[in-house]
Image (cartoon, rainbow, N blue to C red; front, side):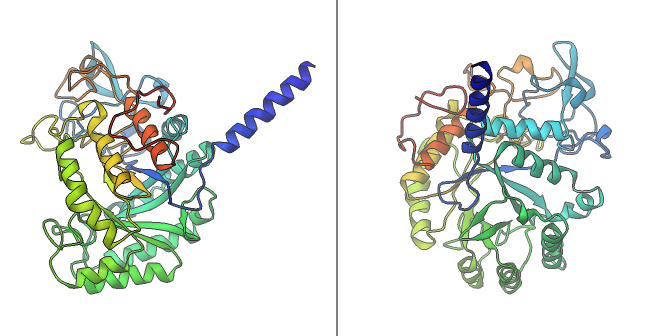
Amino acid sequence: MLLRNLIAAALFCASAAHAQKVDASTLNGKVLLGYQGWFDCPREGSPGWNHWLRHAPDQPVVDLYPDLSEFDKADLCAVPGLTIAGKQAYLYSAWNPHVVDRHFQWMQANGLDGVLVQRFVSDIPRRRRTGDVVLKNIIAAAKAHGRVFAIEYDVSGANPKTVGQQLMDDWQYLVSDLKITSEPTYQRHNGKPVVSVWGMGFLDNHPPDSPTEAKRIIGWFKEQGVTYMGGVPSRWRTLGADSRKEEGWHEVYAMMDIIQPWTVGRYSNEAGADRWKDEVIVGDIAKHPAYMPVVFPGFSWHNLKHDAKENAIPRNGGKFLWRQAVNARQAGATMLKIAMFDEVNEGTAVMKAVSKRSEAPEQSFWLALDADGLDLPSDYYLRLSGAITRVFHGKAPATVEMPKLVAGGGSR
């Protein structure tokens, strides 16, 4: 009887684990999070504290301090001169597979679908030279926890003369050498692997400069048999504000299979999000139904830009993020991107962050989840992201009133 019960329990667990795997065949109903994965530390083979610190421990370039309490100290990096309540403070490196695996554990526990892996064109040579360790960590963690992933190139700061060839060469390398599209967890849509290229059409320092070259690049990707997603300016439809103005960009945007407009910082409270829905999202979806809105929990990049306000766009206890997501769903969006999972530099991360300022380093300015005067658990925004995902899965209504969040991504 005991053996029978053990076998039954094992079969139940295996069945439950299989049921938790995210369907990688379609973006319909999906909520994906941007995953930077760009945090390094010296002991992991990196030349420095990439994306954590400027020149010294008291010069961070991140605002939101992550909750590292679940990590083994052996998997973290002690930061010289950085202390929390007089004790050594730590940061992490995405080069460590245990760190990335923990992130994907959190995604699975909270019912999150997966990630768009940010791959900066300007950083491709270093990534490839050092073995693409972080990407391999992501592939392994997605497989282990049944989450999906797709590549999202970022052209910010790339060389306009070489950006097209860099994109083409790298995609061929990823497909032929790393064989990422053969992974069962690689996100597909309409029968094709998804590739996102973020930044085309933006005004400053986002090549290519001409719509002709942009169309050539998009055409090449589509010839490779992919579903092409474009991370585009928020005003792509009208060629206003942050979009390049040449009429040829209308043709560029029309070539994209999916449009993903960047909205971070375009509004700063729930009222602004409501206006954005009425004035922008509704018209955007009418123009391009394959549409992935971008939502974000709040914004702060004071340590990156010292003249910027601390906690510039408050999170308001999650109401700001929830309202954006509900607005997108009510407007007719069937897919969504949350910016971002781990972007602590701009204070948009939804991964576990310290609940109280006292749990962050004493040195310099740091943001914690109590910045708006609320006492929230460190996984609060993972839970909220899970509740948003349930809405897009059709398992919960898109109501203005926020749900009461419970551990594990559920709501009641």
